[in-house]
Image 1 (tube, rainbow, N blue to C red):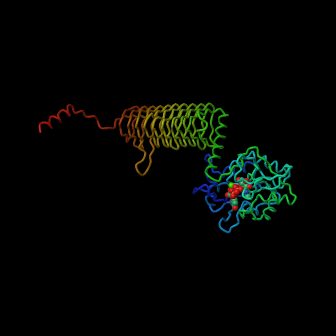
Image 2 (image 1 turned 90 degrees about the vertical axis):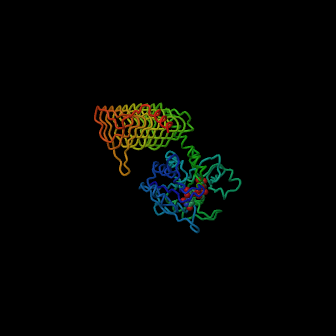
Length: 463
Ligand code: UD1
Ligand code: CA
């Protein structure tokens, strides 16, 4: 069986954050999720996750995945420490014939492709242990891969234990290993902590197995990024930049136009059609789908929403909503969850929509709130119209039939119905049904007091 052990017990103190390191997000997804996804997709069906003092938060975040088994590593003064010790905690689950992958929860750029070719290399060569290595520009902090004159692997030396010559080596240990089960069990039972940090280094398995005449090799990754680990916020930003750029590049190659590709943020599960134009400072999150020919101008955030063809959006926030073809949104509109806007609509300046549907051709151009309402086709919602959906305790729904016209600054006090073709006069407060084809005026009638100002002045002068 292919089994993976993922180490994630370290505190991540250099993050200087109350959030545990492996839960920090990279492009909207927790760092650890990248490693879990890559191992699952490359055929490591069962994953053993070594968790430390903050175990509950990690378990909470990933408990829904039944292929993960959580194993606690006790952390604290006097407790054994090190990657070799941490990996050994999974030993009861490993059998002699397994392929055992060891990876780190804070090295998120591993991916399915590299793990698959790494595993094939390991198996094709019938190695007892294979190390995934990479050649880096900046090797600071990494263990160095030491080879002899014939390029044969000798050992891994940790930076803290390395001499000057060894420090010059640019081939480093990514921290990803593949063992034969039997050799994994043999190695971890024989690790010692006689090094500068008094840790049980998993890397010592290399020299140990070689001393037993076993076949150990390093597989050099073509993609040097896979070795990048996160120790602090600078590393996190660097890795997020790589992930972000890859996603934007992928969409450019699919025909999406970015006015400034360095200035957009798109999460992994977002889907974008052709001839879409995306301007700077656009954020697309979650399961958002953008169909062909959509134009999204700056300062827009769209989360878990579906935007149909030919829509244009300007500086708006759209959450969990659907927008139909050719509709224009914004500037400064807010579509709150569960809103459905039809085709050829307008949701204009400072309009807020919540848990409501607008039929095709319906327009709310300015300063309106449409909450908990079902609005038909070709309805006109005037400036400043408010659906008063809340009485302080409960929320109520309203209904507006096709072709209705709601004059500016009206209050629609829910629950209420406005019939087909009906008109609501500007400034009305509607509390009962507006009948089909009729006009409702619900405001005090205008009273005109002729010469009132002049008379008032005369009276004052007479006093
Ligand atoms: C390790 C490797 C080094 C490699 C580098 C790549 C060893 C001895 N060194 O060094 O060769 O170049 O990673 O990033 O393996 N962890 C536990 N329990 C422990 C100790 C560590 O779960 O007792 C976890 C940490 O949370 C972390 C990972 O193992 O996710 C790596 O540990 P870390 O201390 O960061 O190792 P490095 O010094 O970076
Ligand atoms: Ca590290």
